[in-house]
Length: 227
Image (tube, rainbow, N blue to C red; front, side):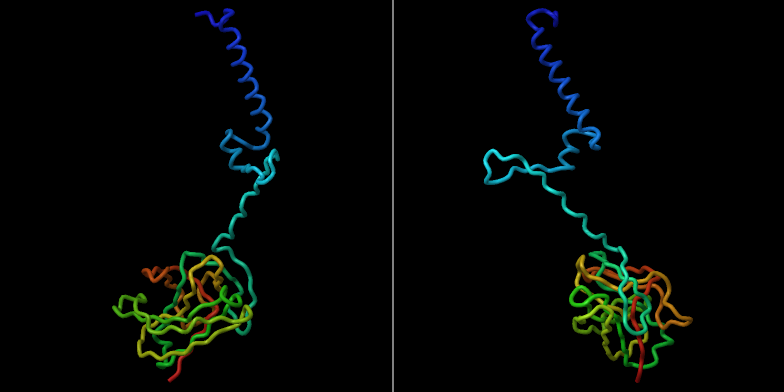
C-alpha cells in the first residue's frame, strides 16, 4: 500500500496537522513547569464550571492551604518560674506524657503537681495525671490519679493538682484531647537545674494505647511532696 497515493494523502495530512497542533500546545505550556500533560495541568489548576451562568467561562479553583505541620515550634511566654517558652503541637501522635519521679525525692504521700498552659481555653487544656509501676519493670502501667479537665483564660497560666499515694515509684504529667489544634510546652534536653526531681526520659501514649519512651525533654511542670 502506497501512503502517498491520492486515496491516503488526505488522511496523512490530517494526522500530520494534528500532531503539529499538539506539539505547539505542549511547547506553550512547558514554561509553566508542567512535566507531563494533562495530569500535571489537572494538579496545578482544577477547573469547574460556574453554576447558574449558561455560556459562562470556566473558573480556576484555588488549591487548599497546607495545614500546619505538627511538631513545628512557636514561643509562648509563661508566668512564674517557667522552664521554657517553647511550644509544640503534638497533633495526633500522642495525647498523654509522664515523667518518672526519682524515688529519693518522694518525701511524703501528698504529691503536688503544677503545670502551665500554653494557650487559653481548650487549645491549652489538659488533665494532670499520675501513674505507678505496678509490675516493677520501670515503666508506667497503672493510673493512680487524674484531675478534672483544666483550662485557663490566658496562655502561660498554671494549674495545680494534689493527690495522695503510698506508691514509691510514680510518674507524673498530663493528658489532653487528641487533636491538631492542641498546644503543649516542650523543650528538648534534660530537666534544667543541677539536681532535678524528675528523670529526663518521658513516656507517652496515644488513646490509651501502650506506653513508649522518648526524650530527653521537659515541660513547664513542678512537683513537690509533703506529709
